[in-house]
Image 1 (spheres, rainbow, N blue to C red):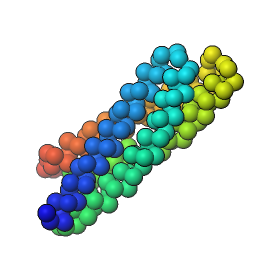
Image 2 (cartoon, rainbow, N blue to C red):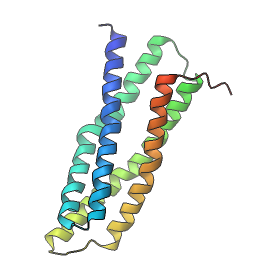
Image 3 (cartoon, one colour):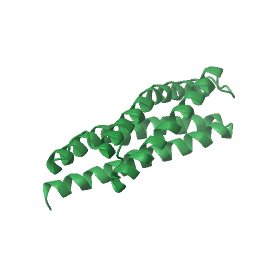
Image 4 (cartoon, one colour):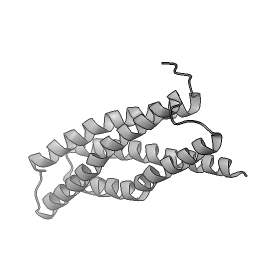
Length: 159
């Protein structure tokens, strides 16, 4: 297999891990937060943080490294419209993801503190963080879905 095809395979697999982990984590955190079950929220928030560190973080570096290497090998300028828009959307998703990581860390700590204290409810701060976490997740997911489309369709996008 050529270097280009190897990079493409790594790029595709890492994109699946990136978006799949994000969507799966969001699904479980969304529903755990609506369950009203503090123990479930503590466990799920801990696992969501772990999934981000194990899967999402490495792919955030693998995606641009493999993508830019393939762009270079293909001789495409970064100003190619579908590519420039894809890069901008990837950056937008990253700008949403960075505060989400901080929010998840805080939510995990707050849920664990409430559980350790024997409380049956989470503090208002947790719920404020949860609203921000959810609000940032929507544009990040839409951005990544659009990147998938642009990577496959490579439309001319004449401006």
